[in-house]
Amino acid sequence: MISQQNEQVTRPWYREPMVWLIIAIPLSSVIYGTFFFIVSITSFDGMVVDDYYKVGKQINRELKRDKAALAHGLTAQVMVEDKTVTIFILANQDYTAPPALEIRFLYSTRADIDKETFVELISPGIYKGSIPKLETGRWNVQIASDDWRLLGSMRMPDERKVVIKPLRK
Image (cartoon, rainbow, N blue to C red; front, side, top):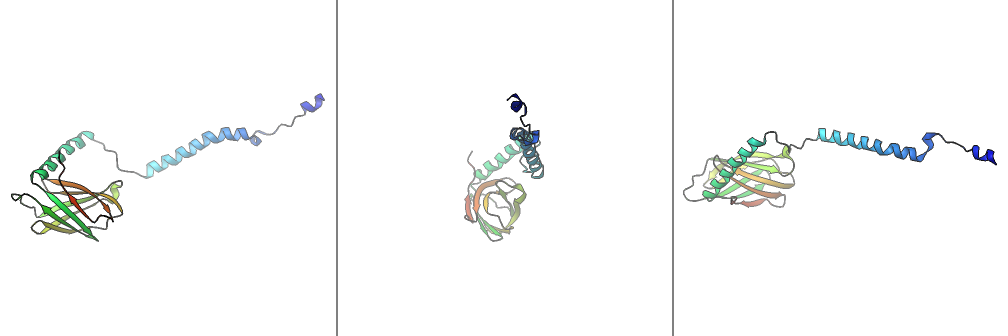
């Protein structure tokens, strides 16, 4: 009887399930960590700013442009049709319209597909220009002159026309 207890069969370590469970936990951490490290290196999102002080000063400058748009009584209607953008500007009577405006379509999450163009004055208060096709999604629209800007947003392809009023601050 004693001989039966001593003759217990010992299995090699690699046949024990608990050993593999203990090895699998840190191994999976290394694999997932490596995967996320590679993804973070290869997919730059462009969201980090190096010089926060300069950005803060720029924000204050931009707020002055928003106030100037409010002082001029500006309102814009933006229409996007295929590859053409038309802007109708309403303003105070004493406002002199510039010969061209800059319009930027900024995608909400991907800076690499932002679009920017200049539109030219074709008749009083009406600007027209061409722009590449806008992808589906939410776009922030920025119309700017040298001294003012208007900000708004639109969702493509559902909203092809949007009215933009100055920010009230």
